[in-house]
Image 1: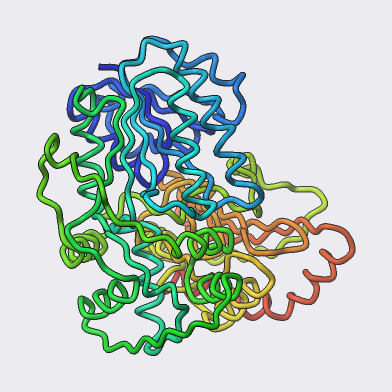
Image 2: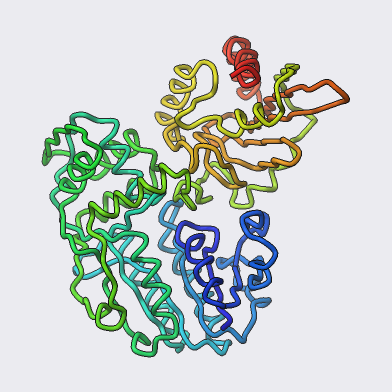
Length: 480
């Protein structure tokens, strides 16, 4: 069976792709930038069943190269984390996709949406419902799965709850913590997406999917605290405005402000399943909230987090074709270059490089890095709290604190990061291990391309901190 998978490098798509291939399907992965596809994750036999095609769903002319003889398609894209009019962007994306589907031999389109059972919907949920209506204009069989909160290692909901509970012993929280929802585990979501494929009983139907527990957001936070054996006190107050609530979520958690704003606006709506007919067609064992947390932490403890919402390229700080930045400019730039020779095995030093950031930190001046992250949050940046998807594994496109991984070349021992913090210019941070005869050196290079006079002034103001941090960071990477 030939299947078109959109969002194949996203949180859901990365997990669904191996399942589809293992079931014997030929999968066409639609990506905006082929360089982001994780070829190194799959062997040659796997890739015989995968085809990667570059196209941009916001540009209808790029879809002409997509095949017409597909049997099924998964629509797993959204713009909730983006700045600007995300609902307009989602409308354009859905319309272009529907127009394309109408020209194909498609037997089924599958769309993962949100639960929209109330009349006065938030902008985010209203947009999801609008996308459903647009996809129906293709006049091809459509199956819609409407999910509430998805809990799994690397999911936005899980990571936000984790940030709140693990960092705040006492929470003074908005009243929306009393809103009810029906969380579902990522494992059940993937099972539904897999098992409804070409199931005629699901054609032109909409299903709510959720786990067995109906909880308030407060109960979810306390349930997480109990699972982690943490004592937490939550006090809800009615005086927080939506804007203040969004800022509260933005500063306390690793979420971006656009996502925080959209999440808060949606939390006024109860997202509880009303249509449970899917269980008659696809009977599954539904994991309760406690079990989904256990499964998530099992993946984290095994260092086996496949995908994370933080790796989505949707921030205004970086163009979506972020890999175009992989060529570090040489002219009009300012540099800080450190060269350290070492005698240890190169593999040990390379592993230290690959484990930089996140909970391990930056090898020197971690408090200064945290202060820089806090300042970035204040001025509307991503801050330092995003951490990293895995403690030891890096892929192009991964978020790494307030950096983005452009290149993670283990063979040539080269790691290249691009800054996503607010800056009056552009910044790169590169680590390379070079071997020449019996000499081994670490080359650490910070490159800054200033924007105007203020950019140059910023660099020179930071020089005293660079003079303290960068030499010791390079030395500790070698000696750690």
